[in-house]
Amino acid sequence: MLYWLKHRDYRTINYTEDLDEAYKFCATHPGYEIIVAEKLKKDIDYNETEFIYRYIVSFNLSMDEKSYVMIKHLENESEFNYCNCYTKNFEFHDSVGAYREGRRVYFNIFIGERNYSIACKIAEEYLNKLINMGNGKVTKENIELMNEELRIAKK
Image 1 (spheres, rainbow, N blue to C red):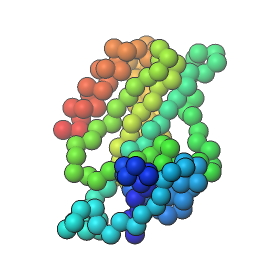
Image 2: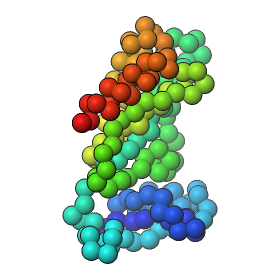
Image 3: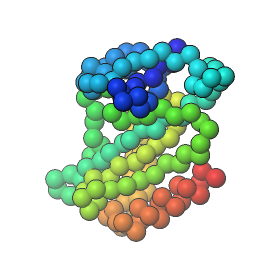
Image 4: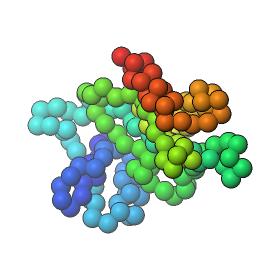
């Protein structure tokens, strides 16, 4: 079964096949409702549709500024706070960004299955590569270079 999470203004926020995750999200985000989706469009059955999952994996620079630490999600936190589900009819590619002059680095990881631990492993590999590109530092130039590499790699 496929579920939509819709806001009262009728924007579709996400899809999921996990009803428990949908309830968890709605419990912490007022104004959303769960709708059973039999079809994504009038004549397209969702059972024939491939999905892709985007996980957002973030790291903070440690207090001693020598390493990055992955931001862990709370056990009872809804997966919708860090994962989105899309139909696989668009070209998606992984990407990297940073806040606060590289003190927080985040990765958008697109994978074909709902698996946060795989996304975390991929993000850790990307972070190590990014740090090595900048001789131990995360720089804007290296983020742009890595994003270009990730864009080309998906083609």
